[in-house]
Each structure stands twice: as C-alpha cells, then as structure tokens.
Length: 301
Image (tube, rainbow, N blue to C red):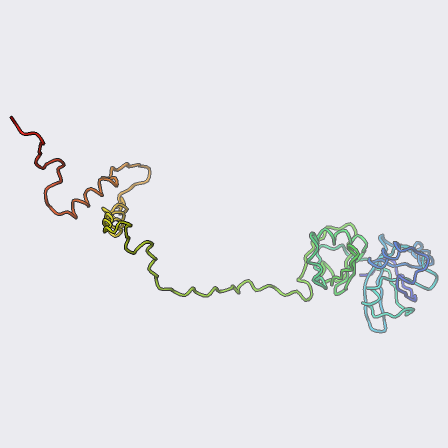
C-alpha cells in the first residue's frame, strides 16, 4: 500500500448520528456505507499533493492496533473532527471523541470477495447477490475481517468480509469483482439422510366373506320350495379357466424390426361353459329334446 503522496493526520472521531448538519437521508447514507466525513482543511492539504483519485484512506486506532480502510463521502465535518459509520466505530473499538490516525493510501482493484452473513435473515432475500451489488455502491474499500452493515427493506444486515483478492485491502470502485457467500452465522444444514421409516402393516388373517341369503326359504302355501339352480361353472373352475387363458408363451426368438401377428385358439364364455357342463355330466349321451313317446286323446278308426 501507500502512494505518491504522504499524507497523515489525527482527528477525533464520532458516530454518524452526531452529525447535526445532515438530514436523516444523509445520516443513513453515512451510517450504512464505507465512507466518512472529513473537515475541509484535509481537502486543502490533499489538493496540494500529487494524489490519485479516488481518495482512499487507512484508519488506525493505535490504542488497540485495529485497522480498516474507507473512502470520503464529503468534506463537511468540523475542524479537528471526523464522522464514521457505526459499524466502523465498533470494528475499531472506538469511543465517541477518541483520536484516530487517517492516512492517504492507494489500493489495488478487487477481483474477488467472499462474505459471511451474520444472521439467517439473509436467507429471506430472494436475490441476495443483486441486493449486495446495489448496497456496495456506498462503499469504496473492503478490508479482510471487517464486519460491514447495510440497510435493506428497513432491516440492518451485517456481513463479515472473509476474503478479498488480490490483497487484504482493496478498492471496489469501477472493478469487475466475483462475489461468493459463506453459510450464514447460526445456520444449520438440514440432514436430508434421515428419512421417516413407516412401520410395517400387520398381516391379518383372511376373513371369509359373508354369504347373503344363505338360509332356507319357505312358501306361504306350505310347499317345499324348489332348489336353486346350481351354476354351470363354479368359481374355482372359472378362475382356472381364466388362468389358462392368460398363460401366453413369450417368443424368445423375436428380433427387433419385425412384427408377428400370431393366432391363438380363443374360446368365448358360452363355449367354455358348454364344455364344462358336459364334463360335469360325464361321458353320457347328449340331451335330445322331444325324444319321448307321443300320445293322442282320440282313438284310431
């Protein structure tokens, strides 16, 4: 670091809220950014020196040897004073009115930066990369291990600068910078390996279905009712017939690209019932209607 000009001064620092000559918009711009307010005398000294723009400064709290870098928002501070964002005061461990060293520096342009959100509220933002790109326009520098603060939708979000390249302190003005995010502070990765195991259903015994109207019928005239006609095909035999019909022999010699239309010897239900009826009646002669002897009421003459 360093530059062609050698400028350093010591000023008393105060938080942005103590700047009484600015409106709320000006205070928020100062408080949620990376630039400070300096007195006009600093500008007079800088213009006499061979400085490079933009103006970048290194701020040091010599009492605890804490350092960060910043730009300048405006030269509106009173003589002997400077106004810093609240996050910068916290990072440097500064009290109101404490003295800091402000030194002009020249920093390389950033090529890479990695941020760590300090709360899980960051996960509620639909497009965090675009949000941070807009908010970083209020900053001039990034320093490794700084915890910066931005305001988004009336909510203060804090980010720790995990890493910056090509140096530990870089300028982000008019640069092409790749941005990455680390997991937020306090975030717990969900365990997708745990799956809810469903208990196996108990095996229940097969219950015989109820047979409706299984009792004996009675007639009003006292006569014995005729027995119901037995079905031609029982349920067991019918299932056997269906099973036999479904048994198809696969063609293991099939070759792709050819179609074969085999003809199967299918029988309709009526034919099957007739064959089963004959099988139940045995090998006797087939039934022939009107085969008995005929009679007449008149005698032959």
